[in-house]
Structure formats: structure tokens, C-alpha cells
Length: 256
Image (cartoon, rainbow, N blue to C red):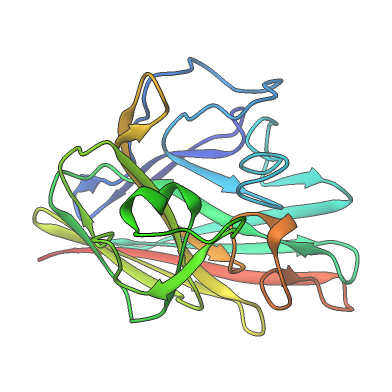
């Protein structure tokens, strides 16, 4: 049900549930592992972003190094264990790190969806990022994001190409469901006592400049912001005094 490329940052290259593939194969920008790359290269699939998504290092520090069942980074060790069912995958994560270590983590899942796919989630605060400015009347000077209420700006639909690319974070939203054609995929993240959100990236041929393509990211997240450097109080996950933190990601699919 899940295929992993351990040499390419532990990237998930396939997720087959309910009789179909859910992960997008990528824009064809790279062939083989990204080990040694200094600038993030989009390879599709699902990258584990840690200890940040945007910022430094871009998309975190794990995508360009090999994995086993675990990976070491910045005085931390992240381990994951997969358990599969008929149409479910559960991933248990365990982080060992210094007490008080602050981080953002996201399962950066790029999905293979057709025009018209929809994303549903409970109403929540939705933080829109500056690339959304052309879709708004104004943008506050130097604001890292603008808060509104989900659903916003039609982000709940993967529409036809219109030259836009928008990132958003659904704050304190642990569950999201993607409905595409005749199936739906539900993602649930659990980590008691930590900020649990869902990040979105809806690229309708608006990124990158010059050679844009389409992509849809639905990304269970620990934290409330993309960039750890912009995290205010409560916006980042924090390792407790024990130096250990665990969380669980559950993915399930069904026909509709």
C-alpha cells in the first residue's frame, strides 16, 4: 500500500488505497535521489518536512538525506513505523530531541487529483500566505499571513488552471478529506498537547515562474505556520521535558 524511497529522503512514492494511487508522480524535475541537493527539488509523492516547511532549510532538512526506519537531524532522531490495513495506513512517529526543542513537521503529500476534486474540513481559522495577495483586495505591509475562515478563496476546490498558487494553514484542524472522482481520502493527525493543523498548497499552474505546473498538497501538520522562524507562542510543536514526543497519522480511503 505504501512504497518508500529510503535513498531519496524517505519519500513516499506510492500510496494505494481503495483501489487507486493517491500520490502525484511529480513534475519530472529530478531523476534519482536528491542527496546532496542544497535547493529543494519537487519530486512529487510525500516528503517529511522537519523542522520547518518554508524558511531555512526550505522544506526542512530531511528530503536530501537517506533514511532507514529513522533519520537524524540537528541533535534529534525521528523514527516512523507503518501499519497497514485493508484501506488504511497508520504511521506512528517518535521524536527524540532536547527538551524544549521547537519545530514544525508536515507530511507534505502531493496528491494525484483531477480538476474538480474537493477538500473538506471543519470550519477553522485559515491563514493565507502572501502568494494569495492577488486574490485579495489588500495585503497588510510585511504581514506573514492574513487570517480568515475556512473555506476561503475557493481553496476547497482543485479547479482549472488560472495561473494562481496559494498556500494556507487550517489552524487547529486535525482532519481533512479529499474527494476525487469516485473515492475519498481522509487524513487524521493526533498529537495530544501539541498544535495540530492541516496545510494546503493549491497550485493551478501558478508556480514556479516561467515553467509552471499543477499540484495539490494536503499536508497534516504539527504547528500553525509554514516557517518556524515566524512561529509565535503556541504556533510550533515543543518537545517536553522527557525529550520524547510521539504522534500518529492515519490515512484511510473509501469509494463514494
